[in-house]
Amino acid sequence: MRDWIINETTTEIDSRVIDADSAGKIGELQSAIESVIRGKAETVKFALVALFAKGHLLIEDVPGIGKTTLSNALARALDLSIQRIQFTSDLLPSDVIGLSIFNQQTSDFVWKAGPIFSNVVLADEINRATPKTQSALLEAMAEEQVTVEGISRRLPLPFMVIATQNPSEHHGTYPLPESQLDRFMLRLHMGYPSLEDERRIVRDRTELNPLEFVQPVMSQTDILELQKRTSQVRFDESLLDYLLQIVDQTRRSDSLELGISPRGTLALFRSAQALALIEGRDFCIADDIKRLVIPCFAHRIIINSRSAGLKNKTREAEQILLDILQKISVPI
Image (tube, rainbow, N blue to C red; front, side):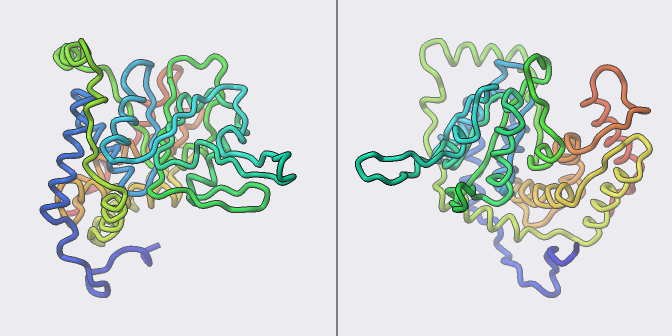
């Protein structure tokens, strides 16, 4: 597993992983999105973490919090194409991926690309579609391509899926299976705004939607370059040992039926690199890992029947991870 870790003694690392110009653009990007999403600086930062780490994002919260607005603001500020797919029980895989249509004039089949061929794909209320349609996203999320009728078609880069779901209302829904949840690098909860932030939201929308004033801050080329620089952020061996101890404890815990997979390990590793880059560092610290453990791991673990309570399984999963963090010594 350590083959993919950057080693300072064997690999030459660009000492300017994050230069002043890139740091300035990242700051402008955060400010542009936060001008629309009030009082959620950490949520905005973690959304950028998923993007720069080439991951996908699951936002789970009640309706009207701003999940769709966050996705639109991100796409506008990055000058990326975005397609919104409203997932419903009658949605078909071809409605997502696309299909070949017979052209009577040419007597041939013509490929019509679906909305997944976009830089940012907003899968709204993903748990309302059937498992067959949900699975249409799996290849795209893992390999940045889709295969239809034996032909593989590459997706535009950068490519990111932002999915939303309502955790409170489950009538007529199809909960995402573990294999699909594991494809999401981070799961976020936006939460209600403070009273002061909500006052600003109301005032901002008295006449015009602030989303209309968001201007592009970065180009596609800028994003691809930052994704490349993310992989160059240094990750010390002691930090890797710390990360692996956390993962190992999830697999040994008596409270958990399913621990963290190797894909989850890689997700935390890469997201920690992205967080360091966003905060202007060319190296990771233990705090990067601690801040990301819950958004990166909580949706990947399964609580066993003996430990599961009757109410909020999400909070129980988060508490188990916090307990694991308290047991493991932080590297100095």
